[in-house]
Image 1 (cartoon, rainbow, N blue to C red):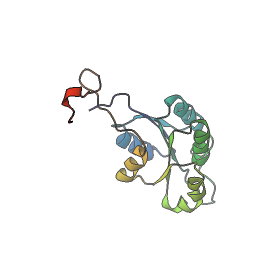
Image 2: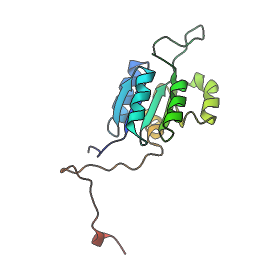
Image 3: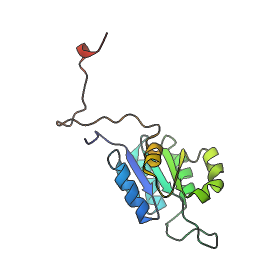
Image 4: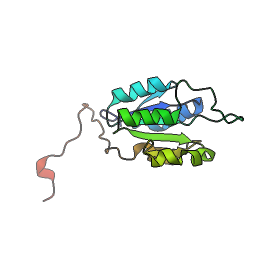
Length: 156
């Protein structure tokens, strides 16, 4: 059943497979936007409002230790920090490979990130990460109005 005014999820990704996984898993609950540019992702999250979620994929490392040149603009951590400053109520999720976790602990403890989820995406873990702290969804009825409870049907 479609949701009435679903929250927006903005995904900043570098890997097309990650984008497909996010779309498949999040679309039933969110209005999903996939961005390959950090400035575009930040603009989309600023326009989305407080109930939004931003998911950023940590850029994979090359063999020489430098970030892979697949993304446009600042990396995931910088994007999430900018989102924290400009939109503090937005839920911020960082996707990272297990071998990247030690270097990410400071940004988790510093408040830049709300949740870190593992890559490759595990469906249950990802859904738990993106739905944490969100209000319960309200399904739309056939007429497009939210369901209501009549006052006389409540137990006393």
